[in-house]
Image (cartoon, rainbow, N blue to C red; front, side):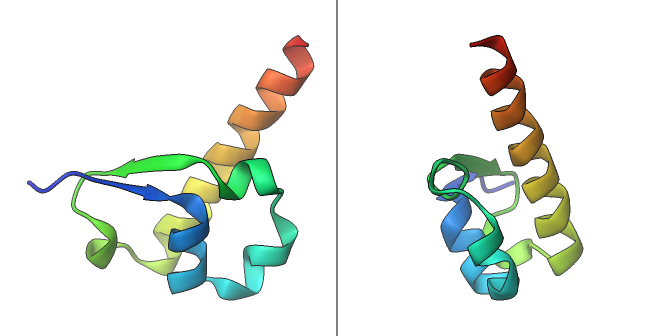
Length: 64
């Protein structure tokens, strides 16, 4: 299994570029650890990663 750390912006631009403008700079600058690397991702996977990232950033915002 090959682990790879990639910025969310790189993931989005590769598989779902139409969603790029809907994410904040903070979200796009997030680092995501991919279990099987960027080449193994599907568009459905990207949507799940984006949802998780937004949820994590919103959770942090609520705590401040």
